[in-house]
Length: 362
Image 1 (spheres, rainbow, N blue to C red):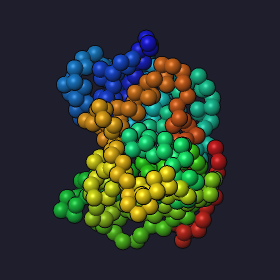
Image 2 (cartoon, rainbow, N blue to C red):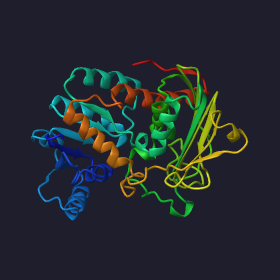
Image 3 (cartoon, rainbow, N blue to C red):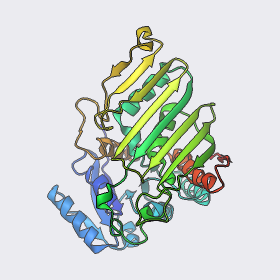
């Protein structure tokens, strides 16, 4: 039985408050500190935590001050473009890190993050790609490992997450928020991360196109959509569509096709309710009639109320376990870079007219 209590803090209390709250009452974990430079956001998080029964958390407006406390680990959940410098400060202060995604925002940051983590071999760095913790993703991974799909030929995923036109407003995001200017294809990890996790593969080249059609007139600087085609080290092709600018509601769609099987998420319902539909050589009749594999984002008995279809709680629990046991996470720094960098270079490819770009290996 694990006896160590991992004391953790969180910086960035928009998204971060939801992730950190999953650990309240979790065995072996204690939320001890929370930080945000925005006083309203800080107060809102405080109320949330207190409503959940947490009364002894210390609240900070200064990140450097929080790092002076005796916490063991930090959840980095600030705006996406600031992750690396904040991770650096945490690790230099001797704290383990669970970093929200994307792990990096430039090729230069990939080199910097690798250097930071390598300089602190006794500390855990984990990339917070929560979609890897969905039950159907884990099921597909097990099926791939036992040969149900044969060799993977092609995989694809789509992230659909736009607003309805009647909700358009210049106040949808604060001024200069990353979502108002960062190209959508850079936010690739919710789709690419799970696919690489299933396939145990890495990306070697990418080409991309970004539609010029503008959906939300209030944020014309952002490329709202992007389609990337990626070649992997094992010879497969991956297609990723990130859609933040069309008449689509929230959803994630996945497909994987191999030499002995094919599987995809049911498009009739959203990802939180979707079963997987499969054609498997090991079940001959399925070549003509698809098999319903009844697993969604959670397995039976798991907490379906946890954030992002049950994934946030499982992700945080895995991180806490890695810290307590000194165990290297599967979603380590190399995984974080390898699932983030293709989106960065995909946008670069689109700017250059779809020119293929080689992806450096870490």
